[in-house]
Amino acid sequence: MKTNYHTHTYRCKHAMGNDERIVERAINAGIDILGFSDHNPWPHFPAGYDSHVRMEPQYLSEYCESVNRLREKYKSQIEIHLGLEAEFFPHHMQELMDLKAENHIEYLIFGAHYDELDEPIPERFYFGRDCLTPQDLERYENNIIPGIESKFYAYVAHPDLFIRSYPYFDKHCEALSHRICETAMRCGAILEYNISGFLYAQEHKRIDCFPHSDFWRIAKDHGVTAIIGYDSHNSAIDFRSSEMYDYAVHFLDYIGICRVDRLDF
Image 1 (cartoon, rainbow, N blue to C red):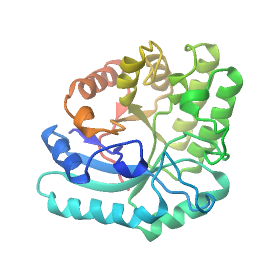
Image 2: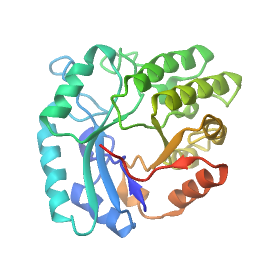
Image 3: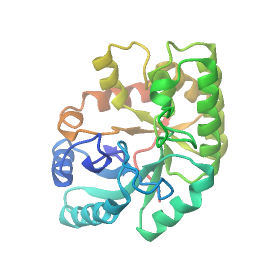
């Protein structure tokens, strides 16, 4: 079975593609289960703030209606689910839970992109760009560990995102990886093998990037469970070849990680 629960839409302002075309491309790519999980709106952001990386609150209902309509229209060809990707902001989790319940969102993905300060401030710190020192890794740890422990999410997206910007996988990365994987195992959390990192590494000529083999060998040692995610921001590119997905399946099976294809909500 080929599945992808990590799919973004144009509403987050850094992805592209019509919802229906995404579904059609997923069908053509042989995907059996497609989950839409665009970046969630946060109600606590300042009035008038225009986010450049997530859906605006006024578009949430239309997003849900579109996904549900496509679920019904294509139910004989593909299984479609409605989700969101969200950060862990400890003081705003009730808002997130209310938003999930009110809009009948089936699942949440934990994407540790920012910590509590997040993006409305000019000096925003993005974990996938600004993790450059051991102190930065500690800041990432202080967000992702309690986020996993909260058990609010169906799975953890790109848990090794920190290596996207960190110079190389050193002893500090190794120690952090052990702590993330130990926490995931203790809490029963699924970790995502995020194949969007392959495209990023190619485009930016990075040797060390996610999904990082050293991280996933540590994950195997801790006995964690993995799920493969496209993290699709452009289905025309992401779904056109099965090469990256097939490699992910082969690698995880080769190193002996337990892998799931279907989520239980």
